[in-house]
Length: 312
Image (cartoon, rainbow, N blue to C red; front, side, top):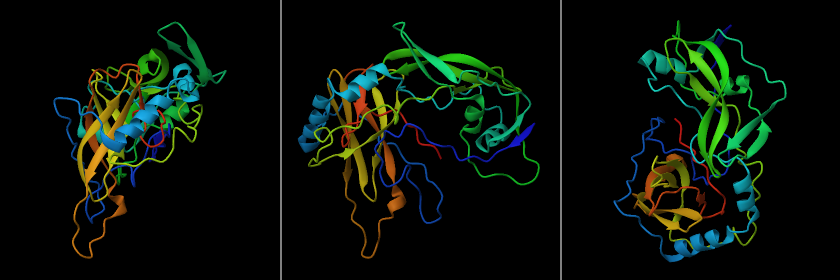
């Protein structure tokens, strides 16, 4: 069966704080411009002022909360689980273009689940039964959306689809999760996609008035994007608008990390309007010790944040 799909990837896990757009964009030509990451310094920058007071309120509300109970008993990855590509992806620009354009020749049957359920197994021996994400749903959600090409376009040939497993870092420590392994012609390793989705947005209760109360800000909420392998460097997106984005600061406890962005207003020329689409900029945040099993909470809403990498 030949598949030619131009898909706009859907988003799961709607826990993150958002600015006026999901990624920054360029000038009047409407094309996206890569944002320059604001680097973290060699030492952590502790939070201060009203933003630190708000972060302390968020951290204090976490122990004993329904939020924490859900976080510690559910399935919440603390790494990106969108996809796991082979170490040699991609062999050519044509292969990458085919992948980005979601152009596949599907020459294998997609497995069908009997029960519709699957298990996530944690390092402590416990397990959680969750709805299985079908191979069809995983295939349809392969990140893509790049502009199509005219005429005869190269495609990637999928020759087999099998169930497998992969270890994922979660809020409860390492877990073995089910995946779908897509064998693509010419690649020794499979392309892997999760066969189960995080529970984000389904099971986490909303914070009460105390946790999400008003606050006087000298900082800006940041949305977690990535965690470095050693857990010492986090990347988050900070709403920028027309402002200059400065190095961020962090509030840390034994249980919680809160990321705080900082911006400096930019003087605009008379009659110059700030486009709402300018969005957010990536900022690195250095921690005093590895993140480990600590939770990253939103400064404004007190909700746990899952890594959500920006996609073009």
